[in-house]
Image (cartoon, rainbow, N blue to C red; front, side):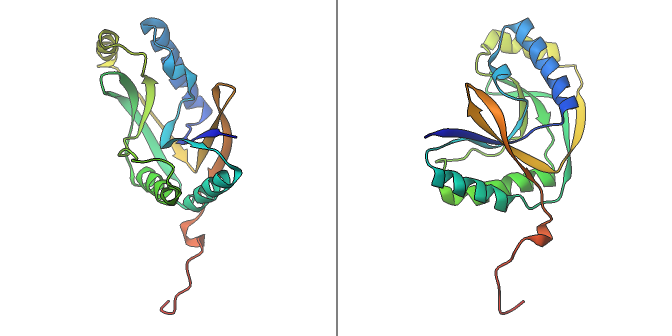
Length: 189
């Protein structure tokens, strides 16, 4: 048994429709298709392979422990890029998003699922991997003056599982009031 999981934020369906329309346009015009293999998402923790039921139990327990936070508004605004092959919607950093990612990373770290986790750079990918430099430059030129802004309320995060060669929704974690989190007992409280 080996399963691949991704921890992410999924925008509401109406925003995903707008994003998918853009991704399809980019794919058809620039002949790049790799991003269409994934759901429109903001990665909170990179994909991890789990090869036992026990590892999966620890993984989902850690995510349950990370799900304490206050709902927040997330803004997607305009376009950006990196590595000369990744073109994306910019995800505005805010306290809620940064805290959520940090909590998830902190709870999963003892499981040693990945060697070195890259610095969190929130983004929503529109094109990557199969984008060659000349196409990348055309893509940047086409979108340099375009504006895009959507915002949505975040009150949960998702886990997607790679099944049948596609990422499928698997589990959702609703954010819970941080004040309800059990605290270790102390003589000095």
